[in-house]
Amino acid sequence: MSSPLRPTRFAIDLDAVRHNIRMLSASAGGAELCVVVKADGYGHGAATVARAALDEGAGWLAVATVSEGEELRAAGLGAPILLLSEPPPGAARSLIRAGLTPTVYSTELADALAADGRQLDVHLKVDTGMGRVGAPMDQWAKLLEHVGGTGRLQVAGIWTHLARADEPGDPTTDLQLDRFDQALAVAADLGVEPAYVHAANSAATLTHPRSRHTMVRVGIAVYGLSPSRDVDARDHDLRPVGSLRTAVSHVKTIAAGQPVSYGHRWHAPADGWVATLPVGYADGVPRLLTNNAVVLHGGRRRPLVGTVTMDQVLVWFDDQPPANGDEVVLLGRQGSEEVRMEDWAERVGTITYEIATGISSRVSRAS
Ligand SMILES: *Cc1c(COP(=O)(O)O)cnc(C)c1O
Image (cartoon, rainbow, N blue to C red; front, side, top):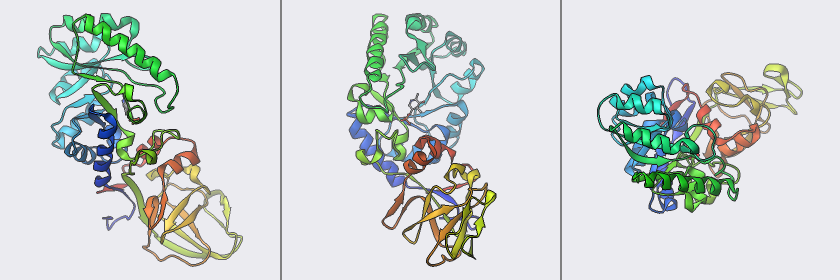
């Protein structure tokens, strides 16, 4: 439902979440699903998405920050929550209090966690080629020994992250998985053989069976969005979860040749009507969509015209005017037409992830 104060909303389809979880469970072939709900569930609402995913059989959640984990606990979610990167050592107490499962790749965090005095499950991360965080291969054995030496930390999981899984066929993925096998062998030699072994993100889960191990970390696919142009959500029967909807807030007639919006970057090609929508770049409509997008009204595609402004955009009607209050879909389906987030990403030169997480907190989430 839309708010009486403002019709602009990001409508969340929880049936689509459940459907996508079923599709991903099938792709994961028996591996457990860890649903990544960082950045407020890629902009879709972390707690709502998490609840639907757990209902459908997902076993784990993952977040990027301690606060994100605390918010899920405050919302009443009791499932295991993996923290995907190390917080500063000073956050050890807070993450333990929130019952989060930390990822560890430094001796500093290991020591800070062990200093709490209790037994704690941790997942260790090895860098097999992402080159971002994780213990380097040449320090992996040292980290395992250090963590074992604390006498407090149980290695419940070992994982790595793939740099090019969204380019199926790229040899980097197998190279990384080979190094991951070596890291697992080093751990096994030290007597560390955890239940949770994970490497796959969404793209790898969908396209690279070898990456699945005992758990997969799925984010973008849960939201029904494509990881890349080469891994299209539609090919895997995934359904978009979020749709960006609003309503016409103002309509005016416009004469041929008349310019609109900042910089007068569009002039009416004929006599017609321009409708205003109460949504702009502060809501997450990229300014690069200026004169470069379509919206849906009455089941038809209509062009966005003129510069995208902070709070409003304009739409051109050449044959008949819309009415104030008519529903307009910026992203999603209306009738038999659809605008996909992939389409926006392509137009502005980014990825679906950035469009989804860019839908700002000013937009109400409705499910
Ligand atoms: C965000 C993230 C994921 C999820 O990636 P998707 O491509 O959205 O499936 C998995 N693992 C790590 C470490 C991440 O940071």
